[in-house]
Length: 300
Image 1 (cartoon, one colour):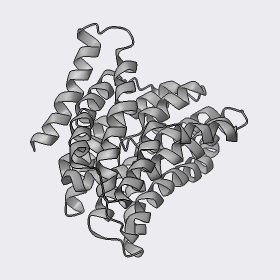
Image 2: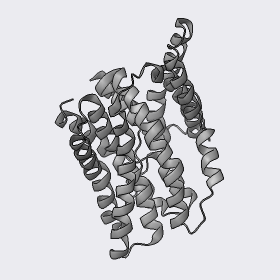
Image 3: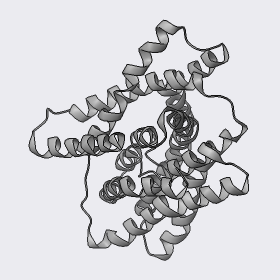
Image 4: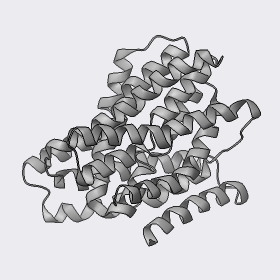
């Protein structure tokens, strides 16, 4: 319970600081840089060597692609029938197809399932959601913005991402027996900064400015992201015989709030950024209730 309370406290602190304390310019960028380039790789280096191979781990990757592919199919078909612009369709595919599996997913999985759940959350994020963002996310953003996707840029983005490099190193270290005891105690305290700083950053970036013309799009988008996508993921896992903590973490990662980076990507490609930020803000608040509830329903 105290771990969940920490999430709420850090999130609220971020909201209050952003609105009342006049933080220095660039503070969010600095925090995000630390989280993505230092804390996240350290966490990956700590946890990945401890992950035991399980043939069911494919599900953690597949459910991330299912979430994005389903969003693309749903909004790609539904949007034109509702008279939505290409920008709106692209924005909803991005923010409702990509989950906040690191900034929100790691702290929530740690709070709900400890380090074993966190290790599986890292697999879902680094082998599932991050490649979806870097590959399919860039393709969708380019298509709906009227640009041509650049394969070289996409591959460079993947292979130079610090956490992805840490993932490869972690797999190799795990295969060779793990870290020496002296190094093993270095990564944990650095990685521990990810939870408070990530949630504090999310709170500072929180925005919720719904307009009358956005209500239907926000409702449909979050209906997919927080309800239908995890239900389909649960159905896939159940039919395939996946069970235990792998099934629970995979479904809950599919149920995470929309990804902060997806909203940033929508802004970069001019895909109705106000809608993207509204869906992001509403999704963050709702997921703090729906994810723990989903965990209870899954027997967590």
